[in-house]
Length: 208
Image (cartoon, rainbow, N blue to C red; front, side):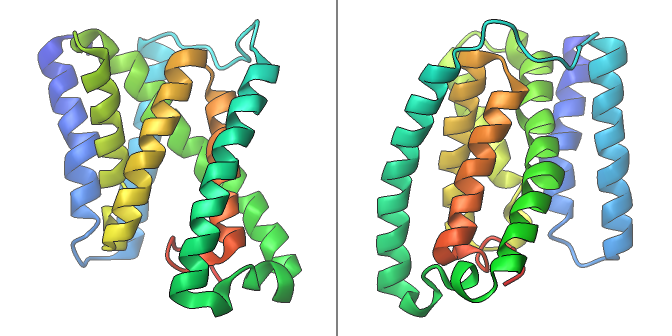
């Protein structure tokens, strides 16, 4: 399971074939079953093949992480507020103001049941399995952003593809620096929750 050929086939199936197949119109139950099986396979490989231990990385630089994340969030906030205001001003903070209970519920569910599994797949698993196959670090991170974007192709929305590409770059860089699933999950959750809060939830598949 650790040969280059095996990893290449594995990469193609998990990060290209499966996401593209989800665009095809077939049973949602079958799609969910495939997704669950795929995720269980990833957990198995991480624990049994790669001997990965899920624990908090010692020596994390929390102060630096929060400083950088808040700075990036500020830039994202300015751009997204302008975007929503100019494109559909009625949506600006609409769920937060009109449905605060739904807002809190979605933030919780999204952070724990969407963000964390995504980061296990696209950062922890990807970096653990394929980093040794790339000689160029920048290319390795760029490919991560591409497949993360491709993982959202089922939305069939070009703006979602663009947003997730740049999000993928940010998250890959954070994981590369910290080697922490926890930190990159927190960062991912913060940006995703902000997009829902500012009024872009419908675009990104959030209930609104």
